[in-house]
Length: 339
Ligand code: AHM
Ligand code: MG
Image (cartoon, rainbow, N blue to C red; front, side, top):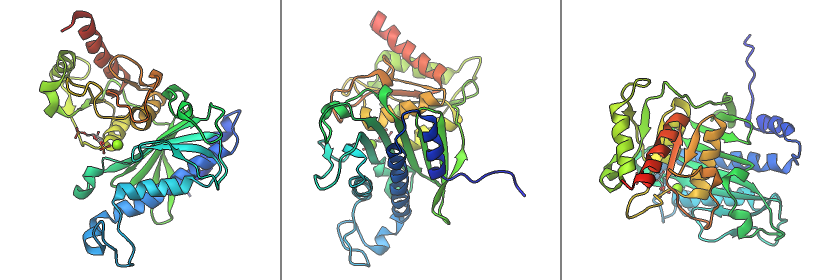
């Protein structure tokens, strides 16, 4: 007999909720609904390679249904898992320009869900890991069905954040501010099972940096200097090694488990980089901090940024806290000296 217990994500969410004094039950239901949507998306992602056989995007599949692009499919699944439950007042998605209202025919609730339904979707065709990212905020305005004020809250106010990585297995990782926990989908029983309890980002032993180095010549001198320094290495770490998948969730997941730093800096043409604050950088920053790591835009803590647009971008330096501090130091030196 083994003495390990099987803990499903539903069980874990309920146990976590008991630790929150003001928990209402609604909050747990939102997380459970996200986990359900993740299972549906995971099933479809695993079928992606069969699209050519079962039906091309824009055409009909063998059942006569129209075949959607996977990111549109993922958007649809999350929306339909959440729109009628009475827990959300509105949603924000990378796929939709404006706030997504909850239809009048359904009751409205107290939470805002912000999400990137399928990040890194250009990787689908080459069978590389992709992911879903989500963030949950409490409604703060008097508007029954939410307002910009509810959506544009700093990351420090997040109630929960998480991601799903569709990789060699599907994993869901989340935090409600009580540590970071990871669950692996067992497809044979259709359950997310607790596999990584209380994840901590490794510190001193970590050796990976992760950045798209092809953009080196466009970076500001502080960023270039930081990368040069990482390559040379130091006494604690020795020389570093690089890993870059080009799929944020997969790159972040490795950084969370193995340590190191992931970077998407700005450059002259795009000072704010590429990644979006509300549903990419901010939820991952909450997770990184809860796992003992850090996240900045080079100048400020990501979680302190006051958002001014639903789809605003931000540079991102995230991972082991000493490396993130060093990245920030190089940006500060640049600001002080101008070079
Ligand atoms: P997307 O939202 O269009 O999928 O783009 C986001 C992706 C991230 O997953 C990844 O970190 C980044 O783009 C890679 O960008 P680049 O190809 O410039 O390195
Ligand atoms: Mg994205």
